[in-house]
Image 1 (cartoon, one colour):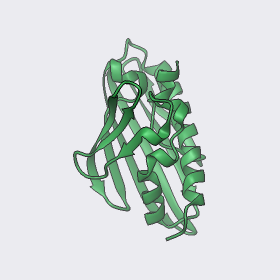
Image 2 (cartoon, rainbow, N blue to C red; image 1 turned 135 degrees about the vertical axis):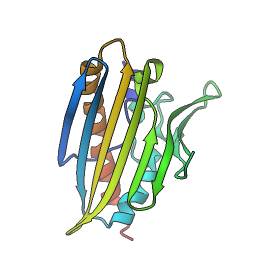
Image 3 (cartoon, rainbow, N blue to C red; image 1 turned 45 degrees about the vertical axis):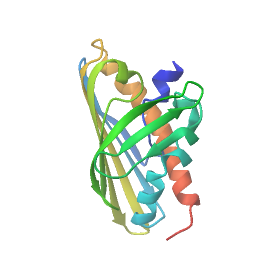
Image 4 (tube, rainbow, N blue to C red; image 1 turned 90 degrees about the vertical axis):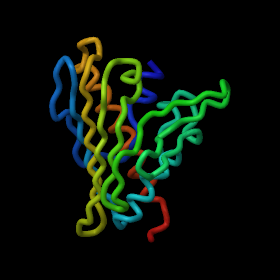
Length: 175
């Protein structure tokens, strides 16, 4: 169960809105929206420092300090596993528009071991008083026909991560 929740996703903040947009036996789409009282660039920078806010309980190594996100096309959202000398590529960065948008591809958590493909689209937008961050994660494929059940679990884990992200972003120096 730890591994299911662990890799289920990599984000965090108290969602102003969270929802399972759609789900079926072979896939789902979840969306989390948070509003932050920090400038867009600060929200973006905080998001890219994933090891600072991701919950260590939702990692394979048990320590979020082992997470990294290389923000360039082809970059890796990866995790080192010091005990074994191994590691995991959670997602691959496929699109970068600094301060505006990140797109990552990959199957998080237990989906890694299924025949699924996932796309996480994270958008950063300036709004009055700060910024809005929208995380949209779509997964499709063969997950033992359990897409609907997985949707609720991934939605919950991502919601917790977004809460942590929101707190982390708010505690960073404003730039």
